[in-house]
Each structure stands twice: as structure tokens, then as C-alpha cells.
Picture 1 (tube, one colour):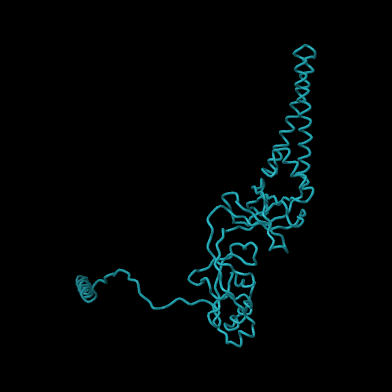
Picture 2 (picture 1 turned 90 degrees about the horizontal axis):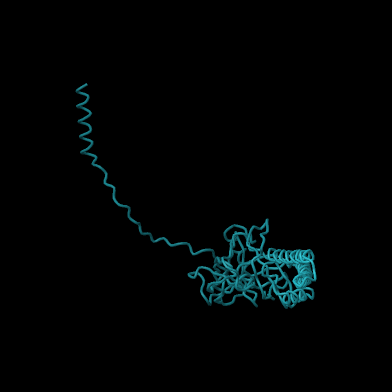
Length: 328
């Protein structure tokens, strides 16, 4: 047994001498000369470019505040008009009962009326007062600031709603979009009239939430629309929150591609067409273009932007890669 221990000890001593401990060196960054891929592109011969009838324009810089889209419809003004009528009737009844109560108190003071008559007049006055206050609270809960407190202003709103020169709409932001403050500017567009936005004259947060959308909602008032806004008509609202404008690019609709869940454009680099990703922010008023942002290392003002034939370029690119152009 002692001989065995001597052999093991001798083996360990030899191993320690022939295999010294390994020193752990600090990790060093390894430099590489590899470059990142240049992105998606397709190269065409001049004959192919002519055959596809491609057209380009210079990429133009744009400066605009970010706007969020909200979707909804024009509201039926009947509930508001009926509430206004009920409040007007209740206010008239309150004025009569108050005058009667004041007259009865004067008569009681001169012993020309009984206390019971005064109590009855006071009860009627308080009843009418409670009804008026209840209707005002109901209006506040349903319409908030969209229901004017001033009777004359309320009358003008009712007349314009009846004449069709004004309209009210409710719009909901997309789930996930939020505004910390009430928008400073709202424009409304209608399907088929996207290039004719209408400026909203008033906007206020809605007092209820759509149980299906579960998103922020707003009530907007539109006055003097160039065409009739009928109840139930679908509208899109563009809400401008407070904040600084954003620098981006004006991208015509004809240049925009949607592919593989993303938004793209093509730039002409002398026969090689580069597909670049962009993010659409909001449409530009009075134009058929969108404000978009992208990587400033890839997009520059003055670049040749393909505005005709972008879908054909995507097909050529996918064909060269052996794939399919699943444009959305």
C-alpha cells in the first residue's frame, strides 16, 4: 500500500512539471475586415428598365409634426338635440317656479299667503332645479365640452347640426397608440376624399371607451365641411400632439411597397435598384405623399426615388433570388 502511494505521488509531481497551470488571458476584441451586406437590390440592363417603364423623381426632404391616425364615424346628433331640448324645457320650468317661489315669499311676508303655499312653491322650485342640474350632469358625462354651457351657443350648435353645416364624430386611436395631452390640431378625411382633409374646429377626449377597441377616444366637431357628413359615415382623423416637428422625407404613394411585413422604397443607383426600408408617419396635407423616416445613411435628399414600377422591381428581385414577391 505504501508503495502504491509513492507511485501516485511521483506521477502527480511529474504531471505538474510537464503540464504547468494554464493562465487565463483577458478576452481581446478581434478585428475583422468583413463588411455588412449592402441590403436588397436588383441590377437591370437598360433594355429591361425601358421595358418595365420605370420612372423616378428626386427624393424630397419634409418637415412635419408627427400625427397619429384615429378611426371612427360621424355621430347621429339626435341624442344631443334631444338633451338640449330637455334642458331648455327644464330651464324654462325652473324660471317659472323660481319666479312663483319669490312671489309667494313676498306674499307670506305681508301675510297675504299661507306658509303651506310657500312650502309648495319652494318644493316645486327645488324639483325643477334638481332636474336642470341632472340634465347638465348628464350632458357633461355624455358629451363633455362638446355640449356648450351657454344656452345661446348651444342653440347655434343645434341649428348648424340640423342644417348639416356642422357634424360631430367619434374616433378611436389604434391599440397601443396613446396621447398624453389633448391634440393641438385635428384633420378629418373621408374615404374617397383623402386628398381633401377637413380641419376640426373642436376636439375633446371622449367620456367612454369602446369595449372592443380599448383605446383612447376623442369627440371632434367639424364646421363648414365642403361636402355633407352624414351619420354613420366612416372617417379617419389625424391627431397632432404637442411637440417638435420631425425631419423626414416626402414619399409619394406610388413609390411605397409593402412586403414581408415591412414598408419599402426603391432607389435608382445607376441601373442597380436598392430596396430600402422606411417607416410611414403621416400623410402630407394637400399632396398624395406620406411623411416617412428611414436610415439617413441610406436615404439622402436628391436620391433617385422610383415612383413608377416599384412592384415590377420587387418581382425582378424575387425572381433573381428564386423567391416570390408576396407584396401585401
